[in-house]
Image 1 (cartoon, rainbow, N blue to C red):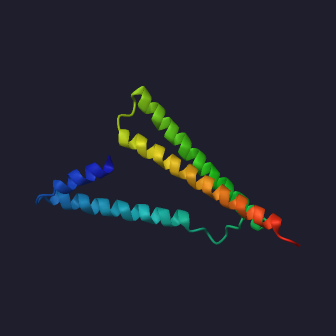
Image 2: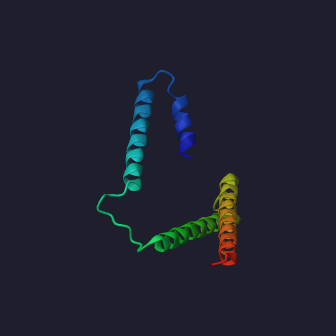
Image 3: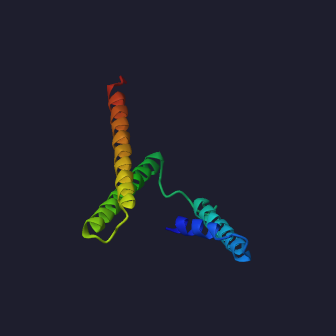
Length: 127
């Protein structure tokens, strides 16, 4: 929806000074959001890893990835249910959410298959 509003504002520039002001305001918003994202991504020097070793880091990363897939699937299900009830009218949004959940699940399944294969290879190794 915001993209369409931005396009409409762009089309409305025509020669008015208000259009340039709106572009500058949008630029400032983008810069502010970029700065916020940089702050979120950059850990502070005082932060210490919570895990006690590589296994903790791997377990935490795997749990985080699975939680993310679960959230994506729940979001997809909620949007689909809302569409069926008539609350959401944007079919593209529903299909995009369903496809996103499908891709996330497929990536999880492929990761599981690779991990299982690696585990089996390790178990077949002679000591």
